[in-house]
Length: 426
Image (cartoon, rainbow, N blue to C red):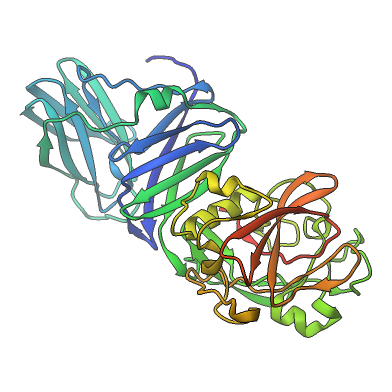
């Protein structure tokens, strides 16, 4: 037994609509305090102290077993271990109650050695290895159903170098406190996928690399008498259409906290709501809370995206500025290279300002309603609220334009009326 400062273990894996994807690297950025660190495959686990600094030591004299990939195992998993000098290595795989399932011994040269482990019908295994009295172990979870299969362990090869791990200086500089929001970005070949979370316990994150398809398992959502389609854009699942929920009221009247969801329809025409969705004041879409990421008027299990979640979407669809790029922190001016045209529908915009809708987001030019109650710019602009408040007088909103290639993030009065789009909670 041993004791240490409490740590959180963040484990990363990836898939493409159910098929395993091997990650090349993972970047973890602290969006609250600043700082970042990078993991390089096969190291896909980040251990961080819940308050303070994370550490890792690149010690080529230490025997070590690295986490398997994929883990949870889907049919099989690959486990690597580092041997500091040629000698006998003993490997024992046990079940959750300590029962030995298989034992393997062989003399291994100095270097990194890999094994292919095929689980049987159990859900949990422990891979334990020993070299010159040094012991190291990892946990293996079973993702599929291998009922009737035999547990096997096969040697698959070696390399003489120490595995490439996260840079020690980067990790020592990475500070985390409970409540901090982390942006995690997974890279696989030329693709990237990002997600945000504020972890409070050890967690396994699965990046999704599927895009421009209905969200796996949730192709549609029925809410308040209407059916909405869904769209998967890497690790985010969005409603494909703007919300159109509530009772229409005149544009000259403010929406109120009366227990009834109220909406504006452009030019007070119900057909405009059918085409573009409703327009809502910020307090109405938030249902009179200021909590970022609130459900607001979204369906159960969905929420109004925060400013940070919109940034992840922008970085995911832009061909030049990736997720987490400082470009997305620019406000009050157009940002990005081609995120705007990739998010817009390929018809319906004025002056031939149509997009290409590359990822299926289908952004429409629904226009807005200003603080005086006047409707404006349908066909020219699509404007969506974030759930991020600046102060009592302003909230952030995101705008797509018919004539600019970039996306505009600007602050505006909460009594303005803009579109609402929902993001799935997970």
